Amino acid sequence: MIEWVRVYWPGKVTSLTVTPRGDIVAAGVAERDVLIRDNYGSYRATLSGGFVARLDRSGDVKWFRVVHTGSRLEITDVKAADDWEIISCGWMEQRGLSGHAGVVFKFDGDGNLIWARKFYEGISDTFSALAVTQDGGTVVVGETRSFGAGVSDALVLRLEGDGNFVWWGTYGGKLWDGAESVVIDGSGRIVVAGYTYSFSKDASNAWLLWLDEDGDVIMEKTYGTESLEKAVGIALTRGGDPVVVGKTYDPMKSRYDAWALRLNREGEPRWGLRFPGKEVKDISVSPDGDLVLGMGDFTLVGLSSGGKPQWEGRLRLKRWSELEAVLANGNVLAGGKLSWEKGLIASISPEGKPPGAVGWDPGMGESQCTVFEAYSNGRACFKAVPNGRLTEMKLKSWEFEPDVFGSLRELVRSRSG
Image 1 (tube, one colour):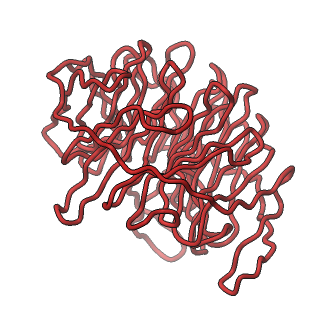
Image 2 (cartoon, one colour):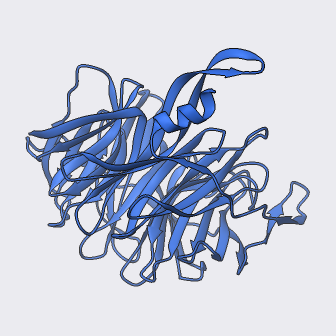
């Protein structure tokens, strides 16, 4: 049953979290088409930025902040460190340059920007997800083409609460590898989920890394079939087991299948389920320990922690919509975009018949990735070049000061002349 649906500013919602007091925090992209007037005349353009917003439990906006850098910026993940600190990450296009830079922002509970950090070396570096450590620091994961051993590598950063580096490292092989999601388990291990071409036999496999607090690899495993697999999300059960969700693309059938895989602490599968014809985008664990999967077509699926399908429901709107984020917090919150135009959040009470699902038992393999690490100020790392030499690379400026506005209207006024 639908409790409420709210359509907000132009753009999309990419991530949802909740503060200890129960407020909703949403993040994503906000944008607006405007008429620009300058010395060269008048022309239409799209002004955009990454946004973070704090909402009450009914979806009413308490505050809204849009971060503008002069180029496209997308916030991909957000977490509440405590009731008065909110951390977000994402990527921005490099203005006048090719490639992307990874970005991290910290706000206080009233929406004031505390600090901003940018990670860029000249090719492409993006952040997809983050996790908050027990001491108030942050672990950020993503993908880099600027550093590492291959075409692209998984990128992992450990930051202190004030935004300074503790360490950062790249993990991968000779081909394409990347990180999509991260959690920190009860033992303090950093569990990174993503994909690998370097360590798969045929097409890409889902790839998991277990790292210690210093970024050293404890173990790494691949999961896959003969099709293309990619892990897109990871969460922890109340017992501490990781549950990974991802998608399989079958080129023969020209479709995606969603899957969920619960592992034990040694990375061995406990159970696996596949959902034919669905594309999973996110996973969340409810306060009572059940799992909620969010599919791209706004289908929500409830599972017990033991892998038993419980319910399935779909938010059906008159216009096309796409889900990007899900949050199980009593009711289920689903966020995304409506008809390519507006950010959307819906609050839904779980109900419906169990979904159609089949067992999924992927092949499991070992991998041994190449790791390049830098510590302290993170100013150096190494890039493997085609002739086999290792070339020292210097990280460019880390701190930066983006423009922050309290509304899209303020952003438009500042740029439209």
